[in-house]
Length: 396
Ligand code: CTP
Image (cartoon, rainbow, N blue to C red; front, side):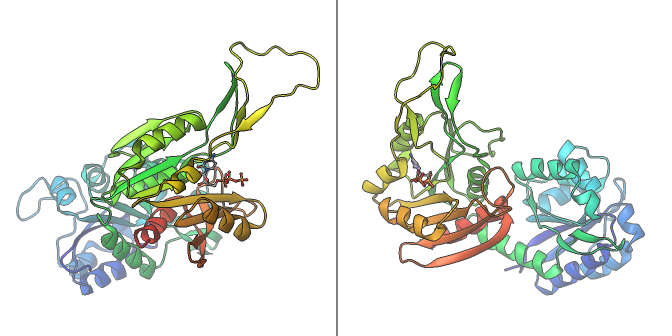
């Protein structure tokens, strides 16, 4: 799978740089073409000569190196790469990329490339968990950069915690998966809903829920990257929509979401309802702001249409994927929803588990298919889970 692929490796200044030597060597053994760019700091940990010998190509370290054959080197490398990996990635590089700073060869090339970028962070736990680093990572994720998450372990500084670079084996598997997934959704039409809905009570108030839209947006981003024509129907969220969508439709209420979904249902191959649709709306919408009066204050609610159940009734070629967010009896409730809504797959979310569900960047889910097969999916970032779910959905 790696045979003949052009892989650009960036190395930044961390002790895990020595592992990059193994990574380069293994990629070469797998038949890939490898070119390496190192930051100045990286050259303090391993020598360019080592990586030149392992990769069989000149190693670029400075913006103004003069290669034997003159090209505008950072643009040449940016275009040459089928995939870009930075291992290890320091907090500094993450920060620079998130801010669009290009002050050396590696950061300039990363800005110039349109190849998929994979970053394998390695740093001290305190740095890794620092809110500014986490915010930078989140921003980059939203822009489509992939992270190969570090693991918890004993760090070179003696601290124990997350920040240790992922094993070379894990990095290689991620890259192999990336190539396998490249454009595997080409020609497929995917409709994804995301975020909460808002059910207006009066001109200033609404009923809603804590959905952030992160799971749906991660799915949309992964589906676009893999070649699908993606229609994203989104409730109000604070996220940057992925580039390359076929269509983005912003809605507020469940009724609006329903109409948008129905308008685009017929031509889809897959419909993934990741939105947290409000089950109820106020029976009457007050045209004027409701003034405070006596207690108790009562609002009467009526049921919203169940979008997914409606889709299930008129299913043709479409595969339907639902989510079930539960706080108890996860399997039982999820299975009931799968049957009742005539779904092909349901992604069941246990909201009581730490690292799962609303607002957070990770998720822990169970998958249940039409035949009752259950698969436990371990904790992973929503971005990785997006790809994982698309791998499963493809097989439906
Ligand atoms: N859903 C929908 N329309 C609704 C409510 C839910 O399409 N009016 C979809 C959700 O997008 C999700 C699935 O149905 O994919 C299950 O949603 P969930 O809120 O977990 O279940 P409900 O069917 O609403 O049941 P309950 O609230 O009783 O758990």
